[in-house]
Length: 372
Image (cartoon, rainbow, N blue to C red; front, side, top):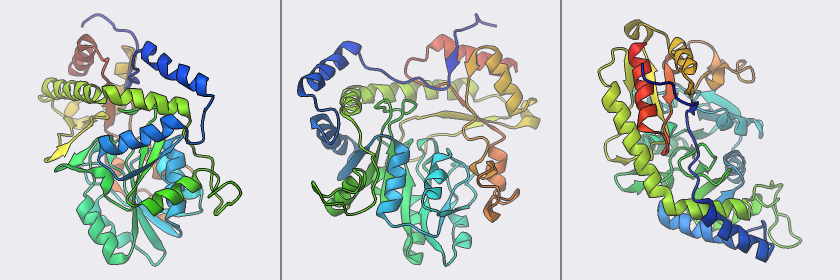
């Protein structure tokens, strides 16, 4: 066994040179503009639109506030079809509006909402579909659009893992009625905390911008019960600086994932997701899946074995959202309703994958898995 390493976590934020960030801070101190759509906020929206290939973007303090506001903008009510295999913020946002989540199982090849199981879950109360591009891998956007169009449903994508992801050259963010992003410290692109809504026309963007500013549409006019979701100038400055480095950050993530795949490919009982055809990925996470019988050890046993060596992976996503107490009372959350999700949540570990992960750390992780 190679030498023990310092504690290694599933991810680590990329931070640009401190001296470069100090220059942005000095200008903020000079202007004394800290928030309320300041110059850095406006500049970041413009530059993100160019980089991401989208028409309109509205910046938020975090991704959860963005998701809550997206549901308000589209006036979603009743029931929303979504996935149990995600982070809890996806469905927590529904509860803010007393919307009932209806869980539909996932596709084992993608870990995304299985579009062929959506129609059977639609009821007269269904108003929208809330799919998640899990690990940054695009959903079957064309099939979901087809179903939504037939039944007159809105589509809001939780696109929190998909910075810069494209499908055959088309940004994944351009699908659906709205897409919501997260710029949390754990993401490929971060602004400390942060988020955004991608919209497709100027009128929608203007309404979203009103909603994230308490509903104000002028100095004294309030048009809706909005929220304080604004991104501040320090977050926006970090985003502008991060954009200078994002291509190299994604490339480093790509190389790490490729090395993992190369070193892990011959281990019985261990599998992982490959790149999707025609997709440009951002490599947000690297999940592996452990078949207890073939591997000879359970996922949880391997998870604990890695922790003994200061390797802290994460079981994204475990437990399922539908297994948390808040959701257990739903019919769609009953055991056996989502068998694929229930299996995968017991098999997954996301291994450490971030630009500063050293080769010796990655090789130690692989060695521990091999010896397990």
